[in-house]
Length: 209
Image (cartoon, rainbow, N blue to C red; front, side):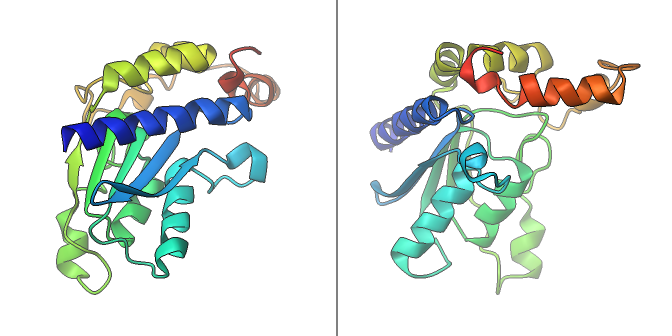
């Protein structure tokens, strides 16, 4: 599967770059079956003004529409960054069999922070809804993903590096880096944080503030 995985992960990189060109965050996701692409999407949150439009969710919805059913059993989902807990739950409920991601997300990840992807209780207690836990391939082409992020979204790359948001391995698995950083903005007034969110955090995918 290495050649197929490489091709489809590179496709995720393309989608992430295209997302940045649309002033979205640099995330891309592909769903395939038997090595053939079924759906592919970049992040769509800003364009749709909809926080649910993560790349993985967009790809899942498109694949379900194309196949005409909610179950994506036998499919693989690829993404340049580890799916968040929200996306990971959707992956489980759509019964995707395999998950391949590049950069780990120890702060928000649905595997390294909250292990939704490998929670065997979901499939064991609710087999009518959830399939067994999917195979997870973590850190695939992580160095390439990191370099892609550095090139197309330098502000986001620098921020994520400084805070440990996205990493090239899962050394931070089950750690709680967010808790260690609780004091990062201690004492900053709410109005200042609002301005930072509006003018920095919501725009850093462009590479400039």
